[in-house]
Amino acid sequence: MVFFLPLPPMEFRKLYIETYGCQMNVVDSEIVVAILQQNNYQLTEDMDEADLVLVNTCSIRDNAEQRVRSRLNEFKSLKKRNREVSVGIIGCMAERLKEKLLEEEQLVDLVVGPDAYRELPSLLQEVEGGQKGINTILSLEETYGDIRPVRMDRNHVTSFVSIMRGCNNFCAYCVVPGTRGRERSRDPETIIRETTELYQKGYREVTLLGQNVNSYRWEQNGELNFENLLERVAKIDPDLRVRFATSHPKDMSDSLLKTMATHPNICRSIHLPVQSGSTSVLKRMKRKYTREHYMNRIESIKKQLPGASISTDIIAGFCGETEEEHEETLSLMEWAGYDFSYMFKYSERPDTFAALRYSNDVSEETKTRRLNEIIELQMKLSLESKQRDVGHTYEVLVEGTSKKSKDELFGRTSQNKVVVFPKGELKPGDYVNVRVDNCTSATLIGRPVGA
Ligand code: SAH
Ligand code: SF4
Ligand code: F3S
Image 1 (cartoon, helix red, strand yellow):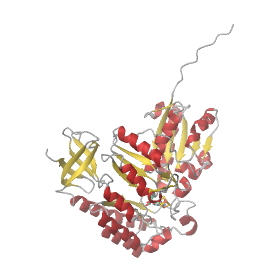
Image 2 (cartoon, helix red, strand yellow):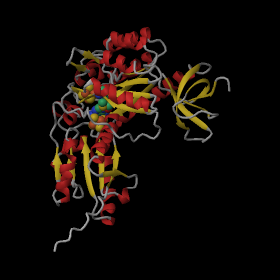
Image 3 (cartoon, helix red, strand yellow):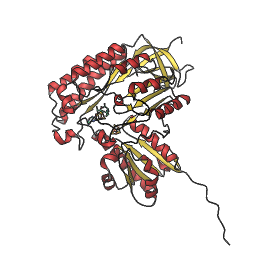
Image 4 (spheres, helix red, strand yellow):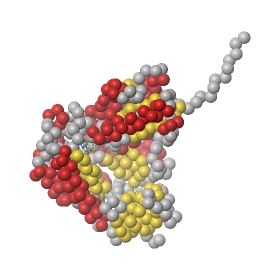
């Protein structure tokens, strides 16, 4: 006689995921969680109970990679405590280093590049069978457009929506075209669907993401460019704020600014990375614009969107940068009056045009000094930018409780400036008019109007 034993209930496996790098990686982790949830994995915030630990990595500067390397070192004790746990490296470092990662980091079981996440379930089966799993094939089409990312944000008010992947610009210093592959745009219908669903769930702000959003283009059923897409997203509901990043100065058009001007819910904040204020450095960087072109774009923003905030990215000490060229960056910053900047020391990245063709000849000491001058100037500009807001009232989208006091909330203005104010009866997701009474270089301090 044969007895059939009932199958044991299917047990979920537990996934713990850490994300480094840019906002694109934040969304990619949410896509990875969605793929794995459909394959019997459940998210955990406790690394010690995980069956699978994934690290979504960044290669943009050497220190980004070093952070991941030291994190992997810390995982050694985790593997000692729990021999069953598998460790996977995904994202840009996986793509850049490929099987070298498996050779160099003994504890790594799995290496998966940004375009191969759909293969994760089958790669995990290989890992379960005792093999190492690797797939770093880049794609010309993959956008994960049909996948609904599992949101991991804390506030349930603001979210990112990826609208394109990859980059074709090949700036001389940059690894992204190598780690993310060729540029491709996502089907607008899936973007609209995802954003509408976020709005229906109570989200009140989306940031449309791409390495160069201005070159978004969709050519099925007629042609749709970035302005058209932005307009469609803005029309989902006037109560939904829309932001976008990143714009490339060579492609930022007046027609985009006009579209922004006609929709008050498209936020008055533009991130326009300049990298350097010197035309000769920009040429070496292969940025494809001059100082004058960039200044013309800023003038146009100021004319068409008065009161908009402008932020930027700056690299200090690129190959061959002279003292005069550095001074040009400082003078451009002063002229533009940036509200905010991300500032970096140039970091040579293997296999980029700059690494292959130029000498990384600005000394570490000089890079540090120049970066410090840039940071100091930005601190002054940021404070001036905040001081201009004192005495004015802004509509603020409430995002959460202030870090410093549970009786205070924080939110952002359309210009992307953080405001802290007394809680009252307000909650995340509300809009409130806040009068700014005071400020630091990083934060506006105010009170709801009428309170
Ligand atoms: N696509 C965006 C930027 C993505 S990377 C754009 O083109 O603006 C984010 C920022 O990292 C860049 O704007 C640049 O300022 C900085 N960055 C990129 N490569 C770098 C490198 N090798 N060293 C230092 N900073 C770098
Ligand atoms: Fe890198 Fe330039 Fe592409 Fe930005 S536009 S991701 S800096 S290559
Ligand atoms: Fe880093 Fe890759 Fe983003 S290199 S900045 S995670 S695209």
